[in-house]
Image (cartoon, rainbow, N blue to C red; front, side, top):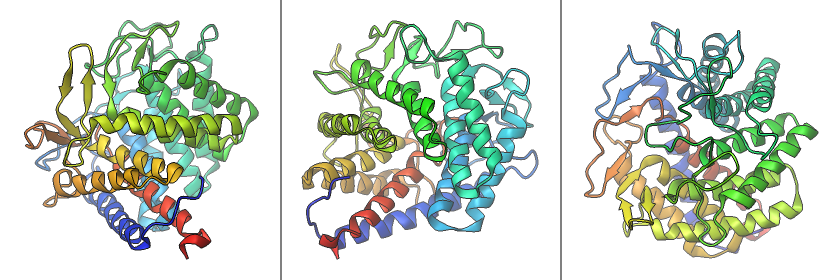
Length: 412
């Protein structure tokens, strides 16, 4: 990152202190509330009232994100309990979620750890790579690195589009064509999605850090080009969410959380592979995307969920993960420009979380708030999608970035 200009060091010190405390609070919640001492692994669901559902299905994304969170936290905190939880998550993945007959990761298990939904969602494989790569960094367990490499090769074997590039979203258990490729009911049923490509890029970047393979590097370069050439709208600098096989856009919906998340993940990928020309372009896009995202901010600092430009309809929900990504994305834009507007937006995002998203009674973060300020009901505190990933990563990123900034002589 370029050196940012001088700012009040007390602001950064306080931000870092608060992030360290919040990271510990998040991980402590998961340690105390989610371990499944009967069936192994982690319980599949806890609702917004902190009621656990021990018979709930267990999602692969949840387990992989738990693995990533505790592994990444251990690299920062060196607390043995964090490594212990990461080990539980890793062992559960390799013994339960990996399909030993056809390869890849099951989408969903029942509460006892038996396959429930065996489809192969590339998004899920990507998060398993992401988690296993982080676990190798924390534990130096070679098996974890090999697991990540095997999953990467599986994605390339079955999902990579050799004609148009990019990745097909989903398959049957034995890698046949799947009629319904959607990650969730709200998604469009298209072969290629921004979301899967973003998290394959994220996963491949993490894998490259522990396994700097030349072929993998070329795959990351191609993924970044997919974003530059197809996914980022050159006029609005918002992301296109859905595509057909030939990269024809199939949606106009704006997802503010994905925009600001991609803003910094693209730059992270370009820097990891040390491609200078791509770093320059990614820096430019990081600022332009962050600037476009400003339109989705409410006056209280919260970032709205989605906007439908065709109908001029703003989806007035403030999801927790969106606020977490805003904290990082705006901080990153400040690092690149020195414009304190972005630093202030990052801080304000955190303050919105602290006051309105964090559950001060039971811990962790609520799913989100409605437009009228009420807590979104019948949504998970922990579940298939609600994990200690976006929020713990926001803490880790802010802590790490401030530590780097403080090493500059200008800040001493």
